[in-house]
Length: 80
Image 1 (tube, rainbow, N blue to C red):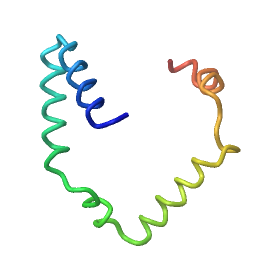
Image 2: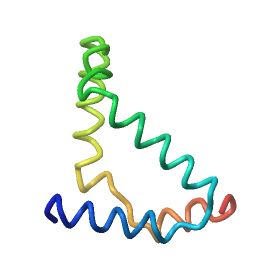
Image 3: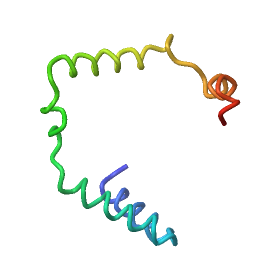
């Protein structure tokens, strides 16, 4: 999707929201994201924390560790 398409879809999404509370939260989120700098949180992590995050990401991407949505729903049905 191009930047122009994203902006157009974004405007359509905003225009379709009637919930004022949701719009306010969305607005606040976008303001924070616009003023935040990429990589700030990452640069505050220790080497051990970075290594742990990268290892967990590899574990998540391993297909053998994944289960289907249906299996997850069955496993946790009593809490859903």
